[in-house]
Image 1 (cartoon, rainbow, N blue to C red):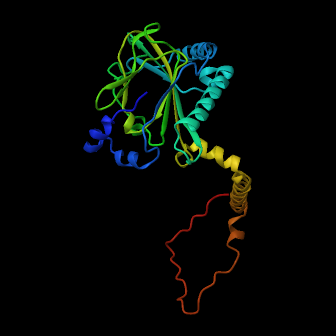
Image 2 (cartoon, one colour; image 1 turned 180 degrees about the vertical axis):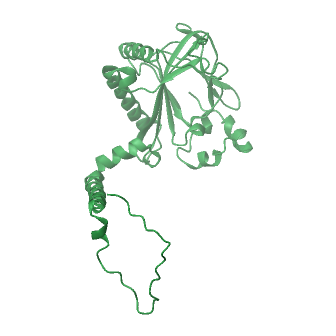
Length: 293
């Protein structure tokens, strides 16, 4: 898909919206990229994951026209989740080889989300925000700074499963359009150069998976932990944590034993009074209360 002159760089950035617009322009990637791959996922893969998505969304709350789940073994089941993770890795490798800036650090998975948009919207007890606008234009990196590359994988097809719902890149000269098709992957840089939105649905349900990738320097906490484990730092950290825990346990044990010692033994040592200090004065009215053991 051709990149036009970025509408966001001519309007949103000049107005200072979003607040981190200056940061978005500093980090990689510095160029606009938009690519489309048909048949990225096979019909069988699409069908299996679409069924798992639908099952995982049962009983979930809706925001306007959309309902979303975070894909994992709990929401998809073990088999479908393994298939999903394989697709995410396939996508990461493809983006690394095609649109990632040369010479940059390896890409990491920053986030993923499964979403269904439907018309008409859910209006029952599961609807929590009927006024939520699913179709507003946005730049992914303006929402999450760690997003450097975005990928959308479609599990349904325009004009067959739903009406409307086309992906629109809002460039200065024209809205550039991508038609959703089951198995089609659309990947693009996540900054303000790729302000985009979805055309409102006229009927049906639109199934999609969003995936986001970034470089090593902008990892999530889970990924940092995983890298610590893989780098061998855990071999050093684990014994240190165990030692600290052991010392804390020993301290608590000493406190417990000390409480069991009679008060008379605890104060058996004579008080030391410096020569220059005045002798202590007894106050008959002062009563010292001792805690019962």
